[in-house]
Length: 235
Image (cartoon, rainbow, N blue to C red; front, side, top):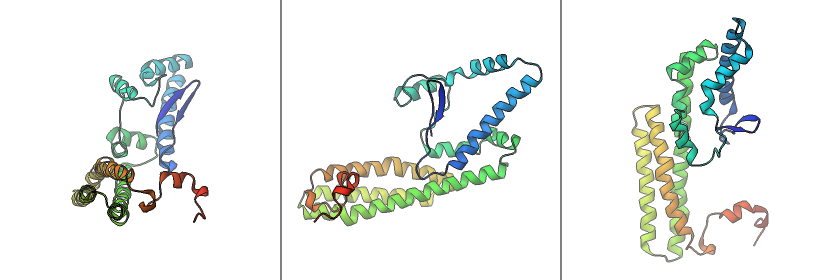
C-alpha cells in the first residue's frame, strides 16, 4: 500500500491482490487510535484543540507531498526529509516486530510481543512459499514451452543456451532460499530471486518471444489474455 494525499483527502492505496486487508487495517487503526489518544490526553489536560492540531501539523509536515507520488523523484525527496523508505515487502514485514512497534501494539492492547513476532515469521514464510511456487512454475514454462518453441522454430542454439542458463540461475536461487538459516533470511533470498533473477529470466524470454513465429509459440500471449472473448472458440 502507499499513503497519498490528494486535494482534501488522505488515502491509502490498495494492498496486493492476494493480500488480506485485515492486518493492514489493524496496523492503520492502531496508529490512528494511538495518535488520537495522545491528542485527547493533551486536550483533557487543558490544551486548546487548535493548538494540539497545529503542533501535530508542524511536527509532521514533512509527510505532506503535493507532487507526483509515483515519480522517481519522490522516494529520493522522502529520504531527504528523513522519512522511512521501504522498497520491498520483505523490508516492510520486518518492521512489524521492531521494538517501538511492539511497544505501540502492547500499549494499545492489540498485539503482544509474541503475537507480533509470530505474525512476522508467518509473513516471511508466506512470501517465500509464494516466490518458490512462482519460480518453479517459471522453470516449467521455460522447459516445457519456450525451449521447445525455439527448437521448433529452428532458431539459433544460443537462444536455447540462454534459456538453459536462466533455468540454472533460478534453480540456484531456489537452492539458496532452501539453505538460508531462518525465515527472514529465506525471505531475503526469495526477494532477490523474484525481483532480480526471475526478472532477468523474463527479459530473456520476452526477447525470444519477439522472434518465434506465433503459430509455434505455445503460451498465451498478452493479446489472447487481454481479449480472451475474441479467441475463445477460434479454430
